[in-house]
Amino acid sequence: MSADPTQVLAFETDCHIFDGCGFPAPGLHSFLFEPLWGDADSNLYFNKPMLLALLGSVIVIGFFWAAFRKPKMVPGKLQMVAEFGYDFIRRGVVYETLGRKEGEKYVPLVVSMFFFIWMMNLWSVVPLAQFPVTSIIAYPAVLALIVYVLWVSLTFKRHGFVGGWKNITGYNKDLGPVLPLAMLIEFFSNLLVRPFTHAVRLFANMFAGHTLLVLFTIASWYLLNGIGIAYAGVSFIMVIVMTVFELFIQALQAYVFVLLTCTFIQGALAEHH
Image (cartoon, rainbow, N blue to C red; front, side):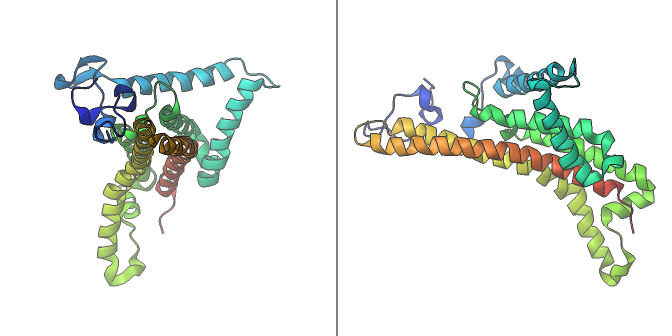
């Protein structure tokens, strides 16, 4: 059992209601993990979220490799599922946002991002794993940084140095006297707020969802005593409801992330007027 009674999980404690112990509520400690390898003090270590991220990458790569290593004109079940997922993102996100001509070159990136993020989210409901990797801010931040660097580089590549800054600042001479203020707002919005919100949207949803799942799971165990058993049943039903809801949110957040990615790319490629 953990030394600190405020940092125990449901399966680590025998504490129940009416036993004279407090409810071990989840908190930030629910997102901290001991190193599986290395030393946390030296900042050189390997922990559970890193392992899940690595396994998730292997699973996504392995799935598509197995599906397409020997493609057939009449696809088997695995190839059919992979083609459906690939085409859903290619046609439903990339082509719809960027068009077929401009968007084709970005399909591999967007498809890879979608399935990687979805897999990282899915770990939340996988037994033994039970943790969404994207609830650690570093992972959404790095993904958002990749999109940010791509967006900025495409903007200047397409429009040149002066045109790129006009695109980023929303330059429009028709705004008249309010043009400097509008450009300042657009500058901070695009260069600072945009990458921040892109990362935080994914992180916050996964963080909140995992916290609620842990809360109801611990409550189900904590109430499993005496008359509290009736309430434990209600809490367990909420665990099931929240799990189903999380499955929807996990896919939705992966979709929203890549949809915004395509929107940013579209903005970088759009002609400035």
